[in-house]
Amino acid sequence: MAYQTIKGMYDVYGEEYRYFEKIDTLFKHFAELYGYEMIKTPILEYTGVFKKDNDTSDMVTKEMYTFTLNNKDYLTLRPEGTAGVIRSFVQNKMYGNELPVKLAYIGEMFRHERPQKGRQRQFNQLGIENIGNKDPLIDAEVIAFGYFFLKTLGIKDIKVLLNSLGDYDSRLNYKKALSDYFKDYEAELCGDCKDRLFKNPLRILDCKIDREKEFVRNAPKMSDYLSEDSLHYFDKVQMYLKALDIPFMIDDRLVRGLDYYTDTVFEVVSTNEESGAQSTIFGGGRYDNLVKEMGGPELSGIGFAIGEERLLILAKAEGIFTKEEKSLDAYVVNLLRDDPYALEVLSILRANSYSGEMDYYNRSLKAQFKSADRRKVRFTIIVGEDEKKTQSVNVKDAKTKMQDNVRLDDLIDYLDEKMGEEYE
Image (cartoon, rainbow, N blue to C red):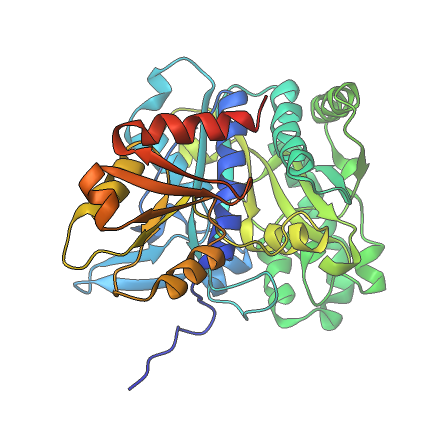
């Protein structure tokens, strides 16, 4: 039987893998620039890490891969990165370090949702979490990290959407106002939103089914219910973003998909037609209670997550990543039979950081040269009986079309000099 991948999960290899590596490398570079330490958390966690009693998000209620262990403990494949990072922060008592603690991650996530372009059931996320102090300056810097990361990658057609969900009292007053308002439209709400009406009416604003209905668009705005402290905080976030020359728009209906957010929430969306209307590249926000809910002290945090698959689609649409062949520094054409000399030459190349391959199938000279051409090698290195006797090799330079006989002891110096000539 020929097995296929599970629906919504796929293989990454070849040039696609190299594109992911380029994104990851740049992200790690930004993490270093902004003072973030990389962290790896388990793919599998206890379900309680992600699921809270009052959580009404689609991710928690519909999309998690959850199963039991010995009919006792519920385990879940992580659907997002923040909760696992906060669990690790609390478990390892990182709050004993100087605050804020700044952590960045790269990893696979799992959600049981309908697969579509840029959205799979197993997908990759890049994310950061800044945990400890609550300050609008930190909020602006977190947004700046993601915004300038995209700009440096080469993504041009983007804009920042910004909103505030306010502090505890602001959210409480706003939820009551929404609940009172939507009660008059209960019959017109979808099944999920009828349940949200009594649990968390904020989520109605973000409903995929109801959000474009006129009565939802005309719902009360969060900005009218922000406390004086929350308004002042949000004004400062905007002031710092302007100072960083980051363009943004206020989106009153932006609530994000997870229920633990407070105060600042944001999304960066693409305006490129190839990505679809208002396609979200990354989003995040501040959370005041998550650390405490995980058993830690009362500390605030803020972070974001970027879906790599969607980012890769955008990068290709904007011409950042184009089809490219993997090239090698050298290919050893082996004219010897049952002799280790060619392997010794290849080993010397690799030991000195030159990528290389050789023929293993006793093919003809012509066939081996064709392999070298297909690999787009810079140096074709030929070894035969004469070269073995004199402990030398013949090196053909694809750039200059010149061929030289070089002593094996001098090979690396010769290649270094040739490569150095390109930068003179």
